[in-house]
Length: 397
Image (cartoon, rainbow, N blue to C red; front, side, top):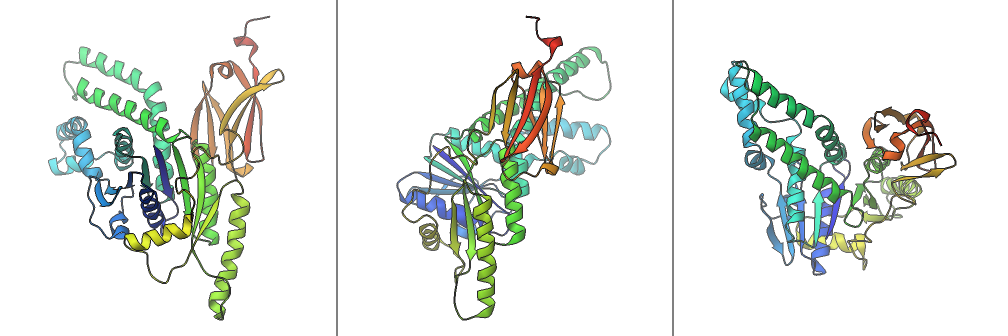
């Protein structure tokens, strides 16, 4: 099975690109699900077919659905919601307000990930094509499994023991969460760990960046590539949409075409290791399967729309560790990163890496936990962090 995630700045045509790609894959005989995780769903509009929270066959081998996060919240979080509502009620909060307050921040992103995981685990599909939210929301979505995993592995076990101890010793006071609530949170941890394994598997999952050849959009796409690499996700294609044809007698169109060609040259130079595919500005909005198939034919031609699995964003692995003289070198792929936007810190057994406001906690392998950070450099799209053994933690030889 392959998973393709489509994202880009709002309004660049990612839904059209995702739906067209799904239609092309299905036309080649692969059972395909196009799944919309964007809270502002427009997949049904692109396909010109009403969609709901269950997969609907819209053409032979092609299915589509829009994630209903409210429905999934009610199904998956009933225990947690009841506990929180009771807690607010004890504090004198109006029941209707209490119900609103129990909608956890970030729940939409969590439930979208769980729907993706459930569909992948169902074994029904040869390909999953995901129409993600605009870039900023997608980055939060893709960072979520690892961030929550870090919290659950380091904080939740202690938190759970403390709560159970309090239940044994308290005679009154606020209600403490029962085992059913704690088990629900623990189950979430396991499910998100499965999501992380699915999304970070290069032979299965890759991201496609959709952009228009405009300076603001291209700049955001460059930052997005860096952030995706930071979280360990691979980009296997850049799709440039709404490209004006060169030539013609209209000075206004000719000016736009020249500007776009300059931006496309910048895109090809910036994303040098990644295929860049272009899609012309169409005379009519591509709505419906027939129009989407034309879009796919222009984007991919005779090529396989699934593309090669495991294509990298830069040469080499995203994260590597190796010996370096009397120490070790940990390298992280950060294509297009700017030195001024990168910050590095050590926190116990983790390396805290921040790039343009996006933070990742890298759990260090055991050998590096007994080392000190001895410098770092950013060159050629890779951050290299040098570690030297800490004499206090290594036995004398």
